[in-house]
Image: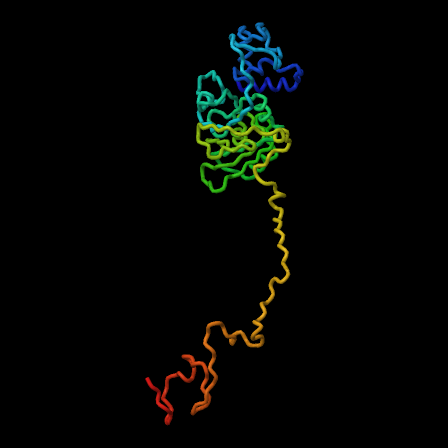
Length: 349
C-alpha cells in the first residue's frame, strides 16, 4: 500500500541517515509525483528509469541536483513543494491506493485538481471525518509519530451503559488483548443524553489500529459511529463530506514538540484569576464641585435667576397685608375650596 510504503521508507532513511551526496532515487521520483516509493522500485526493476543516460538496476542509488533522471525517455520534473490538505472522509471508503477486496478507495473519490497524495494515518472503512493528505512522505511520517505530540480527537456514538469510573481509568492507559494503549481522555458529550446511544468525546495521541473502537468495547460500549474532528491543530470544522481544502503545513517547532497539544485549557490556566486592567490615573481637578456663579455667590440655587426669566416682583401692601410676589399654588390655603369670608371683596369669575 502506498501510504505504508512511503512511511516505512522514511523511517528507514531516518535511522540510517543520508549521505550529503543526494537523496535516494525512489524518494526523488515520489516527491516529483511519479509514484510511491515501492512503485518506483518496480519501475526500476522493469528497466524504465535512467540516470544520466544509463539504465538503473538498483533503487539504492542516490542522485544530486546535477543528475538527469528520465522515465520512459521523458525527463522527471523537479520535486513539488510540500503541500498539506484536510479532507472530510465519508464512511464506506478504505484509506488505501489499492485494496485486495476491490472496495472503493479514498484516493479514487478525491476532488479533481489535487496532486498525488498519501494519507497521514488512517481511518477505517466505517469511520469518517478529518483525514490529512500530503504529497510529502517524510512529513506524513513525522505527523504520525506519537513523539510529535499531536492529539487526535473523535466523537464516538456508543451503545451501552456508560460507567464514569471506567472512563476515568482510561486516562492511565489500558491493555486490551495483549496490546497496551496509552492515556485516553473520554467523557460524555453534554446535551446528548439517551437511554441507548451516547455521544462521547475521545482524545488520544497514538492512533493505533481501531484504537477507539477496541478500547470502548473493552469497557462495555459498542461504537456504531466514529467521527474524527481534529488532528493536532487541524479541525474538521464545517468542511462538507468529500471536500478537500489545502492548509499550511506545520512548522518545525510544532513537529519538534514533545508535550501533547491540549484540546482544552490546562487546569492551572482555567483556575487562574483574571488580571484586572489597570485603572487610568485621574487628572488634577477631577470630581470637584462646580463653584457657584460669582455674581450671586451667597444665594441658594433655587433663587438664582436664570437668563430670560421674569424678574421677581416686590411684595405690595393690600387690605389684608402684604401680597406675595408669586401666585399661590393649587394646594395652597388661598386656593382651597370653601365659603368665602364675609365682608371681603368678591372675586371676579
